[in-house]
Image 1 (cartoon, helix red, strand yellow):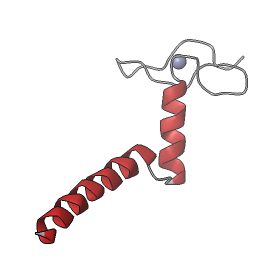
Image 2 (tube, helix red, strand yellow):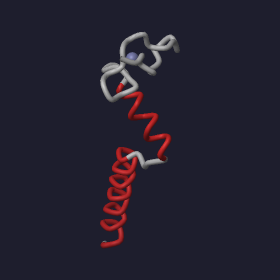
Image 3 (cartoon, helix red, strand yellow):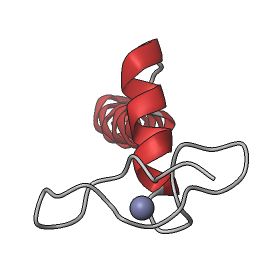
Image 4 (cartoon, protein in one colour):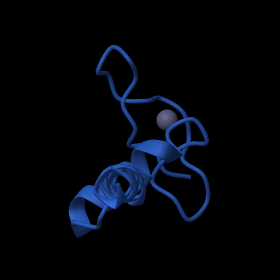
Amino acid sequence: MAQCEGKTRKRERCKRDAKDGSAFCSIHVEQEVRTRREASGEWDTDAIMKAALGFAIVGAIFLFRFRR
Ligand SMILES: [Zn+2]
């Protein structure tokens, strides 16, 4: 089994064994998702949802204001 490629809080290499089919242990799987997202340049869906919600609220306010 390979060593986990994750980093600890002290910026040290994780000493745990990586899970099968992964380069990270169960604690550092989140780091794997993050690095993949950064590498592929994928959109952060959470940020998109928040932006869409913000636009919807602003749009609703404008709609009510200009109705009167
Ligand atoms: Zn780890």
